[in-house]
Amino acid sequence: MVRVFRLGLTGGIGSGKSTVATLLAQLGAAVLDADAISRALTAPHGLAIDPIRQAFGTEFITHAGALDRERMRALVFADPDAKQILEAIIHPLVAQETRRQAQESQASGKHCLVFDVPLLVESGRWRENVDQVLVVDCLPATQISRVVARSALSREAVLAIMASQASREARLQAADAVIFNDTLTLDDLACEVRVLAPAFGLSLA
Image 1 (cartoon, rainbow, N blue to C red):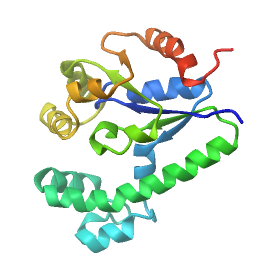
Image 2: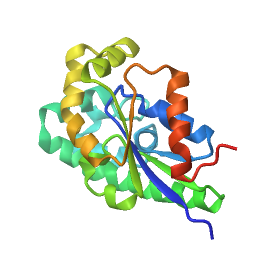
Image 3: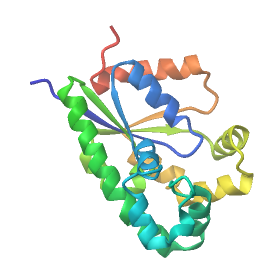
Image 4: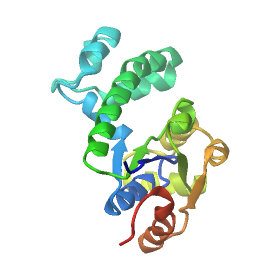
């Protein structure tokens, strides 16, 4: 039986982590995206909606039946207890769906499972569940400029998000491999991924 390589992928907001995940998928990896799973759980009719409504009230659910993400973001930044309650609802559901997708990918013959987890370092539990951790890194100033350019978020909002994530130093300490994606072009980044790919059980053929 072929051994499946389990890669933890993380990086701060604006680092280019999602682009690296896409490049790994193009090389044959199965990418299990914790953010995408979380969004599905909080979309209309998602499994997290009823527990969120019971915990926080109907004002946190939109008319379409989804989580009001802006209202909830404001609450959890202001209230650490609210953040803990929300995480207690969402994290077990994300873990359950991640396991299901991993089993499905493994059964389909994938040799590399990439666990794309923005809060991999913060969660504490992920390190023991993966073979290696790949961190996509860049300078904080680059993170800010990228996110401001691509979104409607202000510089202050981006700084608040960065403050809620692990520090750059903590991510780098947890890394087995690092891609420094500060001034790389997309082609440069793809080359970096291809250099690392064989170590993750991916074939370049």
